[in-house]
Image (cartoon, rainbow, N blue to C red; front, side, top):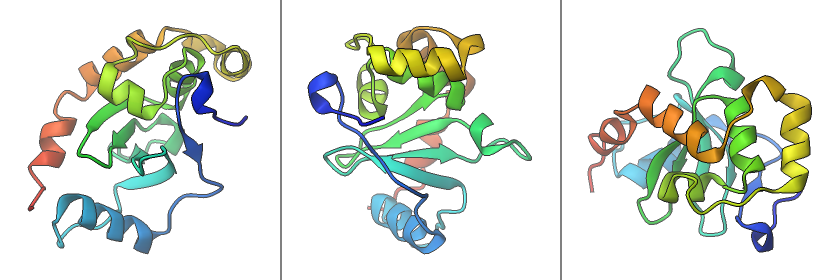
Length: 154
């Protein structure tokens, strides 16, 4: 399903994750920390400003779809978007992309019919508003931003 800014958010999913080398280059550029690798992230898309949405591989031995989704903005925005992929589908269903989730907490979102149908089909058990999904993720991972900011070197 295409993402269209006219429908509330601007996001382009990639056909595949960034490679390990691309992820390492990205996280080093974002943080200025040349000691980091991109091993704990699987970047799967970006917004129009160049901000990245990524799975954060923080749950040992969990499937990738059970990992939280986080956002790294091109201007330093940073935040937890959803605690897993099912919740992410409901964030999208309520019209919030990764940037909007991280920056506004789903407060400015409006339902999107196409994504709602998709979420109802693929994650009916996880139904919730964008704000509820984002708040649940922030509650489960309250230290995400501090953990990342502690690694910044520029």
